Structure formats: C-alpha cells, structure tokens
Image (tube, rainbow, N blue to C red):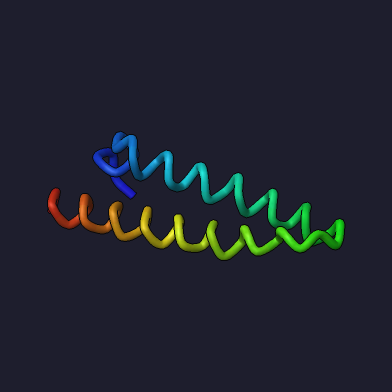
Amino acid sequence: MNWPVLRDLKSMIGFSISKILGVIAIVLAANSNNYWVLFVVALSVMFISVARADKIYKQNL
C-alpha cells in the first residue's frame, strides 16, 4: 500500500471494521453461537475496502 491509501479514512475504517468483525465472529464460533455468520459480513466489508484501496492506488500511479 502507499500513503494515499493509508491516509484515506473510508478504506482504513473499512479495514478496521472487518478485522473487528472477524475477531468477533471467531469468538462467537468458538462459543458455538450462531452469530458467527458475521464472518461473511467481515469478508464483504474487506472486499469493498480492498476495491476502494485499489482504485485509490491506481489513481496515484
């Protein structure tokens, strides 16, 4: 990654939220809770954040 991507607030919030949701999903799965499906949401947020970061990176080439 480069500095424009790291300075972009939306992509950094997306990466942070996806990490937090991923950890919560793992904890819930370990406790046999059915809300571990948050992992799918975390993957979706990560996909959107990566797409945004890629777009920003390509604009600054």
